[in-house]
Length: 139
Image 1 (tube, rainbow, N blue to C red):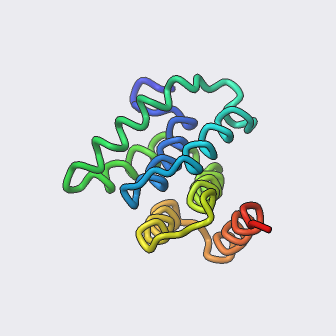
Image 2: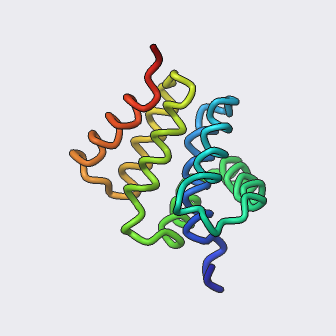
Image 3: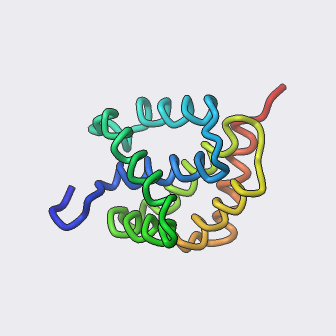
């Protein structure tokens, strides 16, 4: 984590996941389990302290309370996250939103915001969304 950025790249990924989950003001258990599972098992989080999730969550929730908080949040995320991890952030957001098997319009709008803010190519986004959908499909 650099001195100029309040977030590490992993913090930024966690922030995207938390923001995607909280976008509809209903953080579901399945979404929390998905976030915890990804932080505990994905290589990108191998050196990450999971205790930081609470701090990052507080930052996201505090920013959601501010008028231009979402813009500020995306500013922090873009500052902390290398561009090569933008698609990773989008994939994690998609996994969180699909974890509970439901998509609210607000969550879908948040995914659209993430896609636009991180300048995810539309074709790449479609592939990422398809992958999330098939990974979380029920029987």
